[in-house]
Length: 281
Ligand code: PEP
Ligand code: MN
Image 1: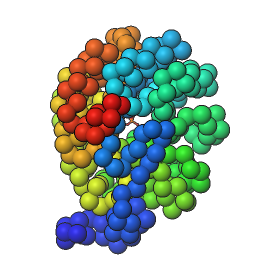
Image 2: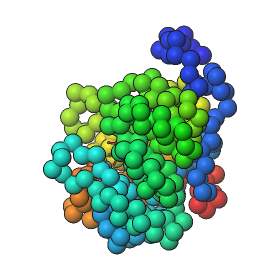
Image 3: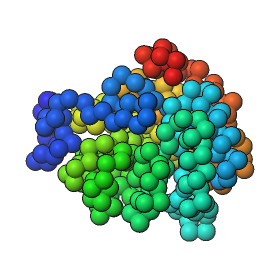
C-alpha cells in the first residue's frame, strides 16, 4: 500500500479495509453478483409514483438490459413541501414490478421503523443524507439484507468507509458503496462526480462500489459519458434515474433520462459490461 494511502487511512483499522480482508466481498441479490466481474445497471424512477408508472418503467428498463430496479418509496427532499414519496402503498407496487420482471429491487430506507414494511425489498438504500445516521447504520448491521450506502455530498471517502464500518461491525458485510457526487464550487452540474473515489475505494476496501451519475451530474446529457467512465474506473455497477415522462416526474425529473435515451445508453455500454453481457443478461 502506498504511503499516501497509509497516511490517509491513519489509525483507522476497520473491518472494511482490504488490509484486514484481502478478498473482494461479493454481494448477491437474485442472479446479480456485485464484487466480481459483473457490471450491473440499476435503473428506475427517482420515486415510485403509481403502480402503472413503475410497472411500465420496470418492463422497459428490463428490456433494455437493466439488472436491478430502483424506485423511492420514501423520498428525503430538501424542502418539506416537495413530494415526499407515496410511502407504504408503494411497497406493493414495487414488489409487483419485481415479480413481473424478475429484477431485484432497491429502495431507500429513511427511518429504521420502516424495516419490516420494507422486508420484500432486496436491497435497502441508505441515502446521502443518512450516511452518518449512526444509530440507523448500527441497526442495519444487525440484519443481513444488502445495504446500498451512498456517500454524502459533504463527506470524504474515509468518512464513507467509516460509515460502512458501523454496519459491518454489527455483523452485516453485505454492503455496496455508492459514489453520487460531492459538493464543490462548480455549478454547471448538480454535484461534482468524484470518479477517482472508485479506484481509491477499491484499493483501500474490499467492498463493491457503484456510481450514480444521475445525482452525480444532475444533467441527462452527461449520464452516458459518466456511465462509461464509471465502468472504466472499475465500478461494479451504475445507478441511473429513468422516467417515462421526465417532465411530469414528481421528483428529480430534470436529471431523469427517458426510456429512449436509457436504451441508447445501454447500447453504448455494451462493450464495457464484459462477461455479463455475453451471458445475455
Ligand atoms: C436517490 O437515490 O433518489 C437519492 C435521494 O439519492 P441521494 O441520497 O444520493 O441524494
Ligand atoms: Mn433522485
